[in-house]
Image 1 (cartoon, rainbow, N blue to C red):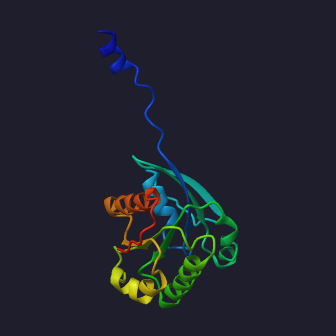
Image 2 (cartoon, one colour; image 1 turned 90 degrees about the vertical axis):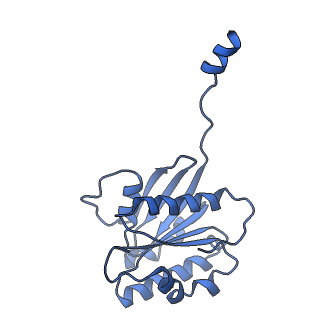
Image 3 (tube, one colour; image 1 turned 90 degrees about the horizontal axis):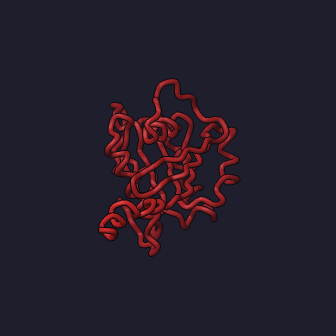
Length: 191
């Protein structure tokens, strides 16, 4: 009887979930703050573009992601690299329905991040946001325009479509990133 009681009541606390420190970058208006707020079950109303940086702990069943979101304005992007140290992964959010000029700027910023010495070996989750807008480009169009196949060859990266309206796809994208973070054998993954 004592054994049964001990088995039911004395298991102790559940094992701690691993925590991963991530950096989230993208141009102003790409939806970084909105997406992270959605994942944290926070209200999406009254969201203001991040000036500087903001840190959010995003809980998942199997991990906690400590996400350092960096503002995407012109005058802030030049300081992004100062916040890369200690990151274990990168989330890059782009507005798939943006103007050609903004898409080109996003492309250049992603290329810089993929080649940055502190980020080049880390897993990347690239979110093609605003897929619910009529002008949104497909994932295949984004992959081709951003030249991801040749640029990210040998790196661990995921390209996923997303929108605030599709929480399940968003959560699935982050689950894939967590899988890459857990994988100690850095094999190349492209989706």
